[in-house]
Image 1 (cartoon, rainbow, N blue to C red):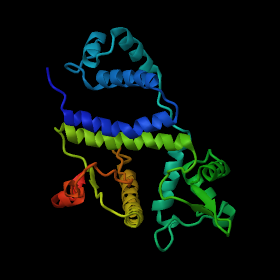
Image 2 (cartoon, rainbow, N blue to C red):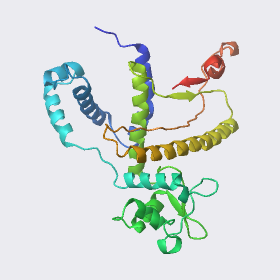
Image 3 (cartoon, helix red, strand yellow):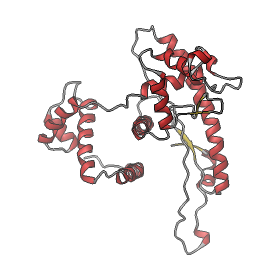
Image 4 (cartoon, rainbow, N blue to C red):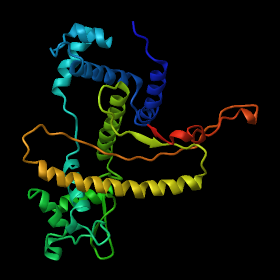
Length: 296
């Protein structure tokens, strides 16, 4: 019988801590989580661990997951009938922001999204109404604008033009939309890291920079620089991806999806307990001086 590596257990506990914090904050109990985990264990085992590419039996899934066969049968039927909930304005919103931040006609001389007049009669195609119409003729721009104002995507300037608050569709207010992107982004980040850990495929880009002996003012400087450089990179990738998608749209080969993301996080460091200052460990940034850019 194989032994589970203690380092893997430690890593999983580290990954789960912020998720458990979120669950507790939103009233999700341990009992609820257990049922959720059962469902996901059965789903992944059934999908990714077939024998000779044949459908798995309930007995095989029970052996693989440790879940009782009665639960296996119930959960397999349940997973086939349940679809993941996607907030209705997510796909439209992402497309609109992508156009607003990448197409030259919607950008100013500094390649920043232009403030847009509210109606076509005021700005022609280069208006908020024109932007929405370029993606969908069936949805009124007023509906989109009201929702975007509610969740913090846009605001009005002094000239009553519509201004984009962010260069990506990341709502500041709407919980359903934020929860959707929370799941999508963390899934793909975790999927890349999992693939790299399991090996057998070309490693995905998955890197981070780590320091643990910085002042609050230094953290602020690094956060600002990270946001500036990060958004420049995201906008560049977005612009190229949109152009490539237009070229690839007629291709009959299998379609692929991608996600490129950037994050920044900081918190106070809890110092280790020691009776001797000489016993204090060096900052990890110094210990890892040969590998400052480390795999996350």
